[in-house]
Length: 287
Image 1 (cartoon, rainbow, N blue to C red):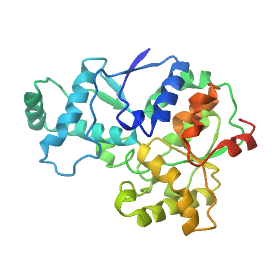
Image 2 (image 1 turned 60 degrees about the horizontal axis):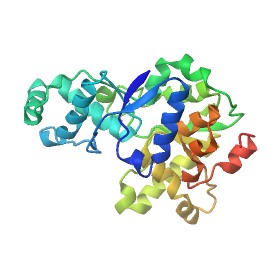
Image 3 (image 1 turned 45 degrees about the horizontal axis):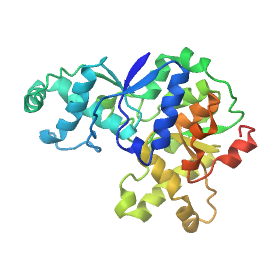
């Protein structure tokens, strides 16, 4: 079955492992991810100015392309998902704005494309995704880090309970792992503060990782390239700030799928992980 797919920019650069592993893993479940032709950047972070109609041009272009295909668009990047969902919320509830952007672009988008995250798609097709599992994850305990973009604002995103989500934990159970619930799983990782307020962002990351460890997590999963970058890439700096910190691996959720499906190790993409998960995987006899 072909599924329209929007990777977004990061999945061809720093998050290439997410792109490669999700395509290969979905193929195991008999879903062929078909990229939108000539897709554009979504505009990244959604504007807070509701009268800024220019910021809605990029999302509408993408959604108009999806409308011409099958009306459903799979979006794995949390930031792209957030941007497209929030733009679509406006298109569905503000016909005047929708008309202005359509006229400007010469499009006829009607607001009815369903923007779906892989976690939602997997939940609706559990039997197919479960049937492909070949390798046990053993007793590996995985903390589920949601961050901000998947959950907020609640009315516009509608992904899960923004304070007590469970969809990622359900995913880990489906893959045969042990999910770890920890209080700071919905806290911000610092996002773009990492650029101009490094120390503040690192303190936020440290609190999240410490909280996950204290609740039993041996590694974390995420779907957000910015969250993954912040959580994974700066743990050496955190050790200098907090010598007691023990680095913890950060996986994209699709890497866990690739492992569970026993795909070739190059699809696992472990070389992309700054904090190597190899020791952990060997401890659980996965590698």
